[in-house]
Length: 232
Ligand code: SAH
Image (cartoon, rainbow, N blue to C red; front, side):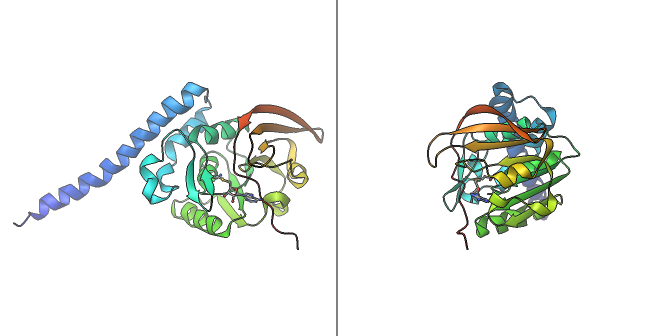
C-alpha cells in the first residue's frame, strides 16, 4: 500500500519536535526534583541545567538514562557526574556572565557546556585524548564557541589564559595542585574533590584571599581519580 506523501511529511514534522520535547520534559523534571529540592537556587545555574542537552553527552546506548539521578559511564572507566553534582559545583563558584573559568577533567564536555551557558570563557583540560577530542567536537557541533579544550595533564593548569576567576576540578585529587591555586585570581574560587584515590573524597571550596587559601569542606563525594602524566 502506498502512503500518501503528506502523511509521511506530517509524520516527519511530528516526530522531531516530540522527541525534543520528551527530553525537555525530563530536563525540567530533573531541575525540579533533583536540583531545586536539594537546594540549587541560582537562577543562571538552573537555566543552564534546563538548556544543556545532557542526552547528547552520554553514549547513545544510554541516552534514555541521561536525566536519571546518578553518574553514568562514558567509557575508558570514566563517568559523567550526577546532574546534582554538576549543578552544585557550578553554583558554589558563584558564576557570573563575565567570568573566565578553568575546568580540569573535560570528560564528556557536559560540565564545560553548563559553565559555558553562564560564563564568558571556559578552558578545559582532559588527560585522555579520545575523551578530549570527542568532547571538543561535540561542543563545537552544539555551538559552544566559548569553550576551548586542551589535551594534557591538568595538574599544570593553563598558564597562557591565567588568572582564572574560578577553577572547577572534576577528578579526585590527593592534594590541591599548587599550579592551579597560583592560576586563581585574587578573590577567585576553586572547587575540588580532595582525598585518597578510590575512597571517599571531600569536596572543598577554596578561596584565594590576600594570596592565601581559605578552605571550606562542603561534602563527602566520590570522583574518578585525578591521574598524572608520566614525568618525562
Ligand atoms: N567533567 C566531566 C566528568 C569528568 S570525569 C563531564 O562533565 O563529563 C573526570 C575526568 O577527568 C576524566 O575524563 C579523566 O580522564 C579526567 N582527568 C583525570 N585526571 C586528569 C588530569 N590530571 N588532567 C586532566 N584531566 C584529568
